[in-house]
Amino acid sequence: MPTTAETAVLGASSKTWQRSYARRLMITDAAIIIGAVFGAQALRFGQTNADLYIPGVSGEGFNVAYTAVSMLFAITWLYGLRLYGSRDAKVIGSGWQEYRRVIDSSLRVFGVLTIFAFLLHVNVARGYLLLALPAGLVALVGSRWLWRRWLASERARGRFLSRVLVVGEHAKSLHIAREIHRDTSSGMVITGALTERGAGVDLLPDIPVIGDLDDAIGATGLADVDAVVYSGSDLISPAQLRQLGWDLQSRNVDLIVAAALTDVAGPRIHARPVAGLSLIHVDYPAFTGSRYATKRAFDIVVSLMSLIVLSPLFLLLALISRGDGGPSLFRQRRVGLEGRRFTMLKFRTMTIDAEDRLPDLLAASEGNGVMFKLRSDPRVTRVGQTLRRFSLDELPQLINVLRGDMSLVGPRPPLMSEVDTYEKWVERRLLVKPGITGLWQINGRSDLSWEDSVRLDLYYVENWSLTSDLAIIWRTIRVVLQKKGAY
Image (cartoon, rainbow, N blue to C red; front, side):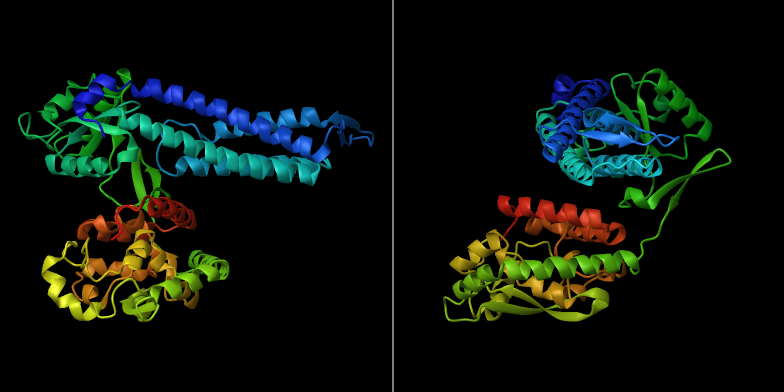
C-alpha cells in the first residue's frame, strides 16, 4: 500500500475513478449479457429464423422473432443490474455486496420475465433460458472478480484510492484507523485526523493529527479529501454533526459514520428510522436452525464426493507417509463444538518420536504465544515439508467432516492445552464446529498473531453464511497454491 505522500501524487479523485470504473463495468456487463443471450439463441435454434408465438386477448396472436425477444431480455437484464445498484460506488471494488447484487438482480429479472411469460401464456423455449441465465451469471461474476484483480493492482501503485480524513475522539479514531489499515482491499487511505488533542500528536506513524474538533465543525482542512469518517465524539453535538454533513455536501465530500460495533457483518445490521433518528438494529447470531442444517448437508455432500474423487491421491499419500516405517496417519485430540473432544486425523508429516522431542523445542517456538510453531522444525520429514507446503496433510480431515466432528469451514480446531488458557470471551470459538479451513487459513495461516487468530475466528462465528463459506473455500485454494504462511 502506498504512503500518504505517494497517494497525494498518484491518487485521482474518488468520484472520477468511481465513474470511470463504473463505465468499464457497464461496458463489460453489456458485452457479456449480449453474448449470453444471443449465444443461447444461436445454440438453441441454430441458423433457423425461430419465432415466439404470443397469444392475443381475442384468441388470435402474432409471432415475434426471437432476435427481438433476445434484445428485450438483454435490455431488461442490463436495466436490472443498474436498478439494483450493482455498479453503485458504495459497493464496487471491495466486499461481497457487489457480487450479491449482481446475482440477486439477475435472478429477479429472469424471475419477473418468467412470471410475465406464464401470465401471458407465452411459451418461451426452456432451453433458451437455461442456457442464457447460467452462462451470463457466471460470466458476470467472473468479470467482476477480474476487474477486482485489476483494481487491486492499480491501487498497489497508488491509483484509484479514496483519500479519507478521520474525525472524532482520539481513541475511537485510532481504532477506526487501525481497522481500515488492516483491510487493504477497501481502497481507503487515511491522510489525516481531527481529534480533541489537536495538531502535533500523530494518530499512527503515517497519519498526522492536523487539527482539533473545532476545525471539523468549521469544515477546515476538508478540501483535499474524498470522504470524512466520523468515529464519534461527545464534544460534537447532533446539530453540529448535521451542519458538518451539509458543509461536506457542498464540497462533494462523502460523510461516513462509523458504528461503535466492530466485526459485525452487513446482513446483521439494519437501519431503523424512528422519530428522525437513524437507529441501528443488530441481529444476534443464531447457532441452530435451517441455516446450520444447510451447512451440515453441504459438508456431507462435499466431503463424501471429495473422498471418492481423491481416493487414489489418499492411497498415494498414505504410502509416501509410511516411508520411514511409521503410521501414515497422525491422530491428535482436539476440542470441537461446545467443548466436545474428538480425534483429528492428518497425514503424518513428522518423525515417529516427534511428541517426545517437543519439550526440548518449546523454548525456540516462533508461534504466537499460545500455539507452538517453528519454521524449521527438525521433526518434520522431507515428505512432510511438501505435504505441509500444499496443506495436503489436512486432507484426512474430510473424514472428520463426514463424521460430524468438523466442518469444511470454521474456526481453527484448538488443542486441549490451548482451550485451558482461554478467557471467557474466547470460548465463543466453540459455538460452531471447527473447520478444515477458515478465515485464519486465508489471512496468514501460521504467521497470524494470537489476537488476530481469535479475532478472525470470532468474526466467522458471529457472521457465518453459506456464501462466505464458498468464498473462503475459493480463497483457500489460491492461498494454498501461493504457499504463504505454511510451516
